Length: 567
Image (cartoon, rainbow, N blue to C red):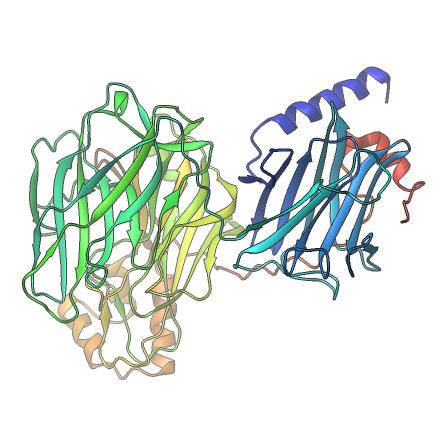
């Protein structure tokens, strides 16, 4: 490689590092002076986590995980760029002394550079621990420790050290722009009916803005936690021109307002969008109406309860790089879907085929998905969102193997995942109805069932939903029924056991599905598709280090085999 080629390579590497990395969506300064910045992203399905540490120093840098916030028992990496090239080692601390090099190196270095007084170290490891000297990363907050030197002699760091506790896998950023403001969209003194399940819809306008603003945080504003099951906000098409309130899904409750803007479920908390995206409101987004939907789950059928629940939106005029949006995927909520009783593990499927998006949008784009909220009701046990390309499964977009109806929240994926136009997304829900003696139908009530996944993505498109439903005519024919009445009688009179439940489940899966894509204006594309096989993707094995340094550190790569630092 000639000198010019090497310069261009290094310049290209520096340029690529300056861009927003979709694999590193989260960042925190670990020190008050902002000399140490950590970026990270993860893939819980593959079982890996990626870090990029930037430190204002030309010396060695250290980073690790500590049981109590100090050196003792800490799992540490130390690296830097010295006179003879880069060095990087996996270590552990046995006290307040130089950490010991692990016999098994379980961190994989991706690149390590030093320029203009900054050292940047990018590396990867397994989420789980790979030996006795490694600490596992869990869903709980973990104490991160750092230290650095003024040169490459690894000696006592003095005051150049610190500790910060961060929840790496359940991270929710919290920023407050200088001009941050908020507005609420809530019910006002609504008398909750004494019904077990009630959906109330309120059509209203948001505050008016001459210029586009970006919503960056959404908080639940719930005044009766024992009654409110979920709150949703939808944007209405231009055909909705007056405010009103009504019981939802009765034919006049603003059902045409179906482009989701915000979602909250029982047990969830605040949700903050990543730094590169915001939900647009105002300006050329349009002076439109919104539909606030609140689902009341009144278990005691209490009368006389008054509610003012809804959602709070924090916004800023400092626009972010992308407009974000929400796409509803999964099993369409229409009559005719039944889950048998006595089922230990019954699977349902909803298919989104993005190949049909161009049929409803003139200028569609790929979706950059960064968060998801999965939703079933009381019998739901697991939810998986499979990702297919070219007829083959390439990933799980999201997985919840321990779904809990009482804890529904928007979950960050850990990295931004690209869904290309033409990809298919399959939402698979697992139900347990062992304690039920009758059919469980798909529907709005908490005792009925749903199978949905709301995808948070950018750049925003005027899309509402991408869902599917089994072809009921094909289903009836496959089960030997000539009409709906005969089929219903078969379903209610069937002796449901493991064999009949499995046969019914396999029939639902193998028949053709009606696949629907709907835009903001309620224009739809209606097609057919088949359910692909969803497989479990095994976690990646434990990381093994070596000279796995990318070409942007070409010189270090040549020296890596020759130089090995020992301390």
